[in-house]
Length: 112
Image 1 (cartoon, rainbow, N blue to C red):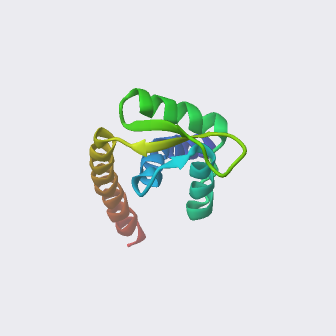
Image 2: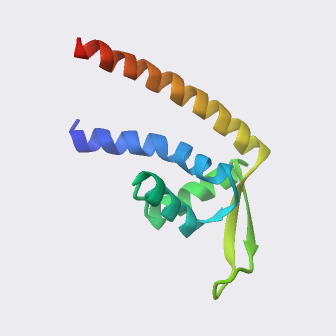
């Protein structure tokens, strides 16, 4: 497996968690999620990646969505974490911390 393939797999694995974290604080529409991820983390996510992911998360009951009239020229679809989504975020965050803690320990051990 190439380094690029490994990086892509790692990125895809963390993207669902990143989206849930992005929506943990407040409702956002799709392009706002993309901008937030890019500005806050340098994660570059395309619309073609984000919208299918958010549709899947909505279908799984982790997100809710509603159309809102905004200050923009057209209505926007806002996404919010559902109660089930908050529970999943808590679970995923715990697993993420546990996993990265193990990898961090291995990295420190490898330096010695």
